[in-house]
Length: 125
Image (cartoon, rainbow, N blue to C red; front, side):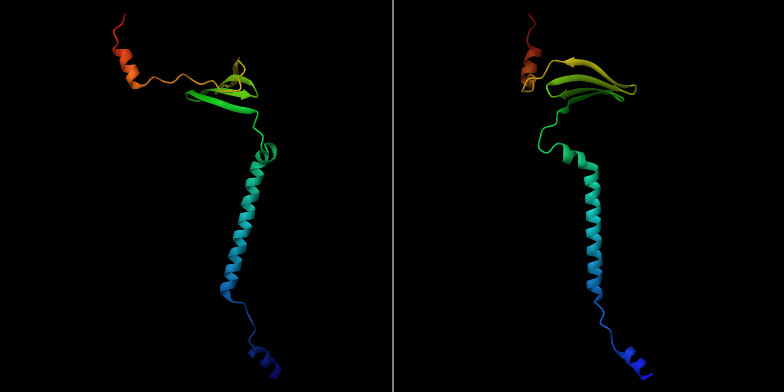
């Protein structure tokens, strides 16, 4: 009985509670960060694996909404361009457009307010 009381009276070294809590939360943050990184990589692996520094061949050059669920898309693939329509009934190819040059076609600059006012007030001849 004397040996049993000696075992109970010896204090056992326990780690500090504060350090254990910090370790648990640090481990939790590390596991969550690894999980979220894996989810992002799973969703975006095609972007990471396919492009690797080269320009994409297929681009949506311009979109024009025509109202409720109707739109026109100008799609480019390499040097080819297509006009495509989208509606609730589906997607249709409207026409092939002329091949694109190396530089995009610049639109004519819009007239300023002063130019528009002069044109409107000018006498018609």
